[in-house]
Length: 352
Image 1 (cartoon, rainbow, N blue to C red):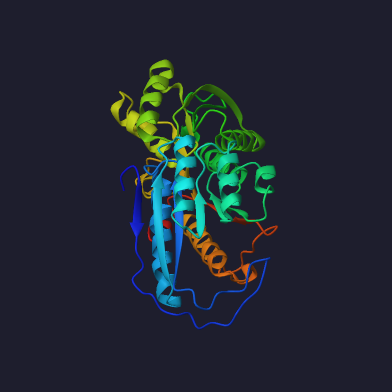
Image 2: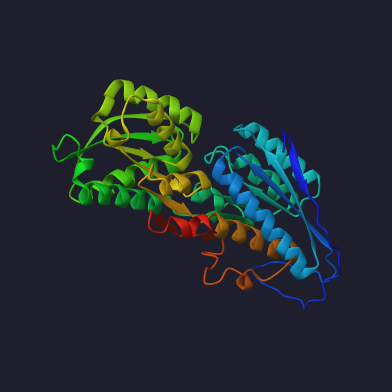
């Protein structure tokens, strides 16, 4: 993709002969629409979950082209973890004539420039995966969010970890009745990281398990950083660690990389849990290296983004979105549910 953008051109350009639809303060559908342009900016194109989500997004876009005869052009930008860069990309997309802009915010607390640029150019914005503050989303009536509720993933991660402790006495290696754990967190101050950690630990405690926090480290959602941080935690705590709570699968797998390189035998490994259900995370569950992960529905989110983008760009009725039983909450939110994944059902998710 490079540092600038990736372009996926539509294969068909036909005239849409559909009836006019009106809804949600959108203009009447333009029955002469031949193509639409969707701009997407990612906080980091190398994030495994986002990479897989965008693959699904492009797949849905191609299917939508074939279904409707309207060409869907997708331009993807990598913000490289810089909000200033992302702001410039949004401005470039506006100037380039994008009908819709999808933003995976670098800094969820600083969407002001993005919103101002969108409103100035009257271009709807769909924020996704990294949820901005609710008050910011209410600043303009053409702002939307597609994602999931972070606390649900934390609760499920805690349930997976608690079940491992309660069902397998060997997990409590020192037999003190206490779950000794470390945490690999996403970003300092990031809402999802904070919420996932808080709810995972609280859920374990609410299951009647006493816990002891041995340490934590910020690994910025990154596998390599997590490996380095886990190596440090192992040097400080050795085989005292009974549980690794990682805010995402990449960091969980990074912890596994560190465990593989350590002097610990496989029997001495702590329980490792993650979130997102990325391909590498699911493989680790299948191989028994992770006890489980929490599946973040990237297919559902990608479909939600695509269907919402298409409806907004063509003046369609948002109430008719092709999202099965999922509604647009409060006229602004599409949220997909999480799911717990363990060895018994991992193949189902790997085959999606």
